[in-house]
Image 1 (cartoon, rainbow, N blue to C red):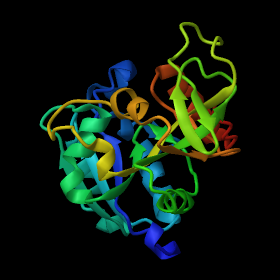
Image 2 (image 1 turned 90 degrees about the vertical axis):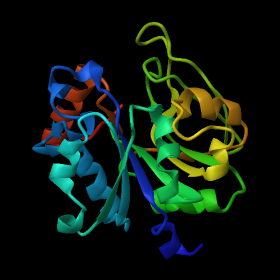
Image 3 (image 1 turned 30 degrees about the vertical axis):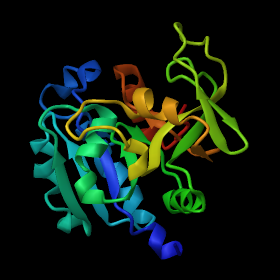
Length: 245
């Protein structure tokens, strides 16, 4: 696959979670529509994807998804093509990707809709395409892995996943999951469409040793999973510091 080909695989953005930890902010909008520096986080994610050459997006949606459709429509106003994979109920990260599979086919670039990592996604897709692995995961260096859990890497492959530490500060420095993946359809083999399951808990641990590791050294990373992390990202985005984790 040439460089242009890396930009023509579908991109699936996971935007369907219930967002309970961000309430009351998310009582009327889904988490990816939370504003950061005057625009929805999802707009920031799609803008970066567009800047590196992607134009076709599948938004895996459920909770309050109409707010996303009302803002983005079919994507034409932004120069994109947007399709909506509407889950019958929140299906988890894995269930959402599988529910959308008829739209993306055999290989897909997946991004979490509540994290921001402006990485070189065509390079990640190219690195994955050069292997015969079912998945590749973007990894970020963190000084404190306790909130996220750490990832062990050996010879360019993810070999183990460490659970989150009980207390903040106990995890130490290391690699964490950056919330972006290249997946083959085979990575979801044995799972039923419409079933609720998690990529992080149910799929990736079982594939350990057969997952490519794409390191994102020196790239700002933000996760808005909690009110504290959202406020920190807002401050960094407004100041332009972009320090991430």
